[in-house]
Length: 546
Image (cartoon, rainbow, N blue to C red; front, side, top):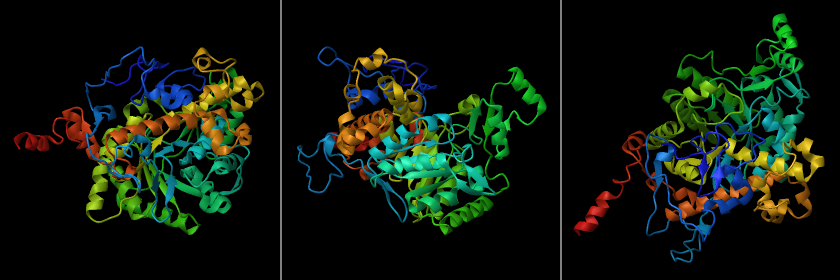
């Protein structure tokens, strides 16, 4: 049984489409008028932690029967006494053991530590047009929150204004825009991460970024992602653009250079082209060779000046998972993001998404097992980030606890994009002169928004928190999508603090797998998390027999 139905009467939320394991619709639209939990949280923030219509209702959970293995079949422990990880100067006094005192700050890295205010990071937002259209919201919102934001693959390659000559970039305006937008509001928490795939490596993206931005950026090698088992894709509707991408060295399907394809496009039988990236590592046949090639890549990146390097891997099988953890640890990388199936996409073959790879909970459970094997041998394990279908505060808790103590961040893709869409749509109505630039999709505010007001100050619960941070004069430069993202993050942060306080864990580094139990025996078997009836049962019997 899935936890999520289309409507949640308790919160007053409704999914436009079919809800996935994360609670998001399987197809999330930029023009959506609401109102799933993530969408509505981007307006009202932490208010959505509680049932609606207080004083008129009572509410009861409907997620107490667990079938199958998923993150929704893990449950969170609570304890009646104790406290662990309170900040210096605080005691076990009930006045100190309150959820606002939970410290959500985290850090990752080998030699150079990167700090984040909360244990979240964005997924890789690359060459899809959604990422380009709403980048200001994602980047500024992420910088204000203080979390890492990832620029995905192919940004330079698909930019018609970029200039590349024999692997040397002389001009990359879209990449510059993305980095500069984040850095404008960066205050020491978070990071801008630039991802590399095969084409990016050939195009000299790593060299361009380090020469222009130095230690301000983290470079990320990419092995894959949870949504697909091939390289990245975008869809283009222009024959001219398709030919440009073909000349840039991409795989374009159907081939726009073929006369019959051009004629079919002219007649309207073909209306779009899919641009694909290449698979990496195809000339390598053994894990030993893969490691040698990987280490050479890392050594080269260090030689040109990168102090911080990360790796993103997808929902491959156990061999590749072990390789990613072992190689990243041996190479002293700063972060390894492990993306399970169920992860999101801008454009991936749908049935591939449905059928390929290892679902997140299985992959993450094995990642913990493999990391523990290295740690038992005395090796320092690379810091981990888990990705693949995370959207709500309880899922963030479960991911961190399942992978503790190795997991430092939860990577969220589609959930973090929802407030960007929503804020841009609202701003485009309130400020019609900005609508086209903002890619707003609405002509008027729907009732799902006007229920809360008609101005940004009325609509967004965190508007004045952002204003306090940036100053009243600067608010004119903050996109509403960034305010919406800040509002969503505030809700997730508050919810996570409450769950951690209930587990008596007042800092992230004190979280552990003992903060979880399995809702069924199958989940226990696959994750190694004991069943609800077994955890502390021996202690319970000793109490009774005393």
